Amino acid sequence: MKTQQRKMKKLLLLLCIFLFSNTYSQQWEKIKTGSEFTIALKSDGSLWGWGFNASGQLGMPATNQIYSSLIKISEDTDWKEIATGAFHSLAIKNNGTLWGAGLNGNGQLGIEGKIQYEEFVQIGNDTDWVYVEAGFVSSYAIKRDGSLWAWGYNTNAQLGLGHLQDVAQPTRVGSDNDWERLSCGGLIVLGLKKDKSLWQWGFYFTLDSSGYVFDNILSPSCIDSNDKWLMISAGMEH
Image (cartoon, rainbow, N blue to C red; front, side):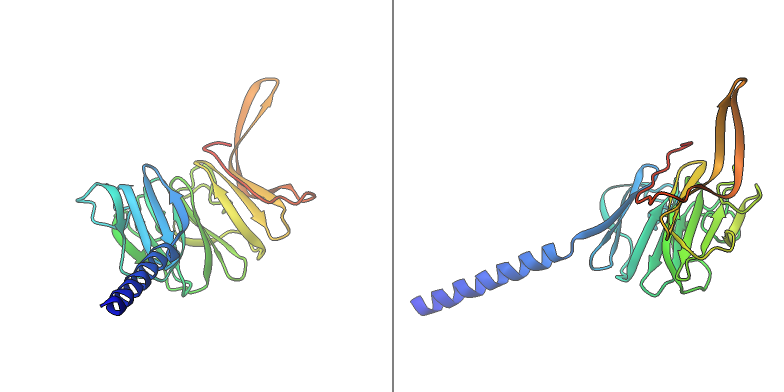
């Protein structure tokens, strides 16, 4: 009897260890907040969300406008990168494909037509995306070769394409192949290149004797190429 009890205790102990390790091995790896909603990525490649969903930005049917607790967005477990805008979400899978969900009124999902998507849909057919970022109503991504691409709302040149027209599909920004990361505000974008130089484009203003002078920087402009910048963060207009 005592032998059986010892065996049972060992079995229960092993079961507890297994359950504990299985639960805590799948930790949260990345988290992004949009306008009143959140997208998060676990170490097992699963995608989760909660918060406001009226535009399907959680990749779930908008009939349920608010998720007040964690919800698993899809059964796929190969998600790698995530980004959130005001009412849209972007993601990259392990195979390098690019995906989006939510509001698309200004082409911010990179898909023609101004309808919203209440589940994640693939953007184009390319399989070499490695980094994604989202502005308020615009989107950006970097490919494996270091090239920068942008699409969506562009009234203040926040796409860096040299003009002020919205673009409804990923469009290459310049010809450089050394982009590393971005930070997108509402009207401006900051960028870091692989040499750690600092760049900006979009809405811009200065102060002179007559007051504030407002302008738009149409293409990426280098702020500082001498120092080695490590982190960037853009607000609505700064």
